[in-house]
Image (cartoon, rainbow, N blue to C red; front, side, top):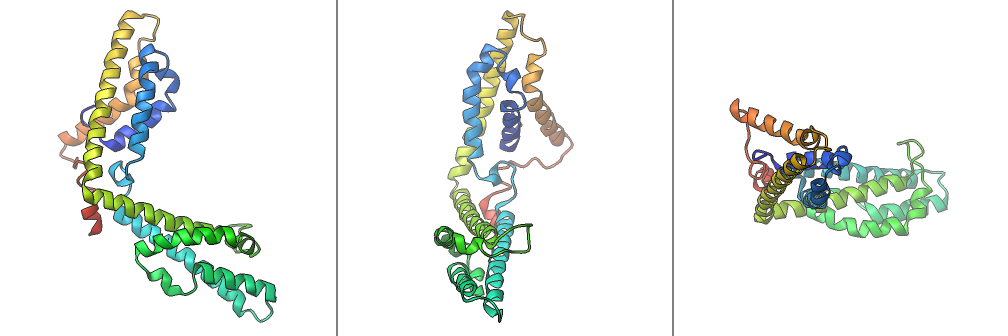
Length: 252
């Protein structure tokens, strides 16, 4: 398993803990190692997506910002349309005014930096709760049966996502997470190898266990390992995921 990357480990461990859970717990060694492997999976899943096979941070930031700004414009123009409507009731106008002023008082706030938009999400999260009834009272065309509350919630969620991605990028740039990730990859592979050896010993002693139990438990890891080895033999790119998806390159 020496060639497995963090993304491979995350994928295979998820499969092991879910689709192959019954096979994992057939043996005493499986029951012993299952909690430790679950902990490793949890640690891997806490890492930035860019380190575990997800999209590069620059792409994720750009797409999240586009979604955030588009939703913000939709909220603004929906409120603006009501305010310009000649026959809108005073109550409806008041709702629209409060919503516009709380979330997007001017369109240029959607041209701010990622950090500024992420910081605004905290304030907007409070406004979601305060203006929940106002937002829910205004229907919007999509999706079906949606209200302005759905759009505003998605807008705030996108702002929160920007903040999370910025935090991930700062960690990548510091070098702390790549160092931690390298150690996590090494210890996870070591744990899997010890489990496999223990399972082999147990199967040799306990003939009641299925003779193909090793394959039932480890075949997905082996398949991913074979893919990595084949890529290396044929000269395909096998750059370490901790270097080719760095925060520095994301900036470019």
